Length: 314
Image 1 (cartoon, rainbow, N blue to C red):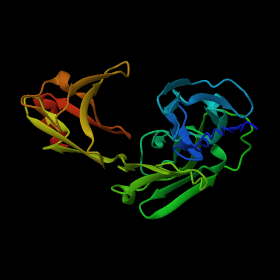
Image 2: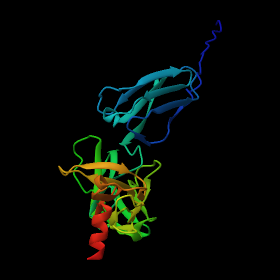
Image 3: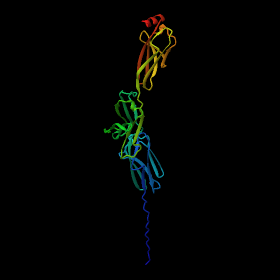
Image 4: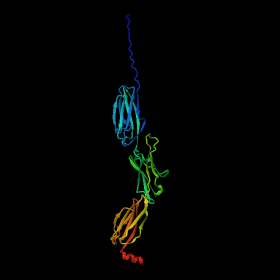
């Protein structure tokens, strides 16, 4: 009986090695509107991976994809409201497929607050100060505080509906009456966007403004030497002073017959070396600064020599 031999050939293929996918910056990233953010999908233990990106709700990516080797990136630039999605990176290696996702959360807190005054600071005059935070989102977490020195003047928390996706400028306003004691104090506007579930910096911004309080001119006085009644040919000095902050500028004028003022000098002292009859009239001194004007006038009488002595005798 012939002997027959049977052979059984069993081929073993090594199991496919499991590959891994990592997505960065992490499972969640905070992106500022207007900036750029790069999402990176990185594969290990796969020689020829195939990449694809999509959003969880299959909306447009609104970004640029670049794949090379074991890495694929999705660049969102500039970041806009259309980028607030859960993004998925799908990797196919051989017959296997893996997906990793990352949530893009949006915020906007791009600049320091802006301090504005309704007008110059004048002692005793009410002024409104506003603290504006431009282009903020989401503003339902925004807090604004206004300090003068170490003392808080006002604070505001914006608990508003943000169903509408938009950048908005929010502000705090208050009116106060400055005094001279406020000069040198510092106004501080502090804005905070304390979103604990989002990692970004800074979450706090501030602006400062040093106060300088003006005082309108007051107590304007005129000193005439030797007298406001003079004989013709005499000399006379008229000196004007005025209090205020900053120190008022002095302006001498002569009042014309029609009531208009004719400017004469910006010196504190107005001098006539040899007076004439036509120098008689009303002279006006004005103390002027950015806070206001204070006016004082004096009547100068120049008389002929005979009349002068006659008046003096009687």
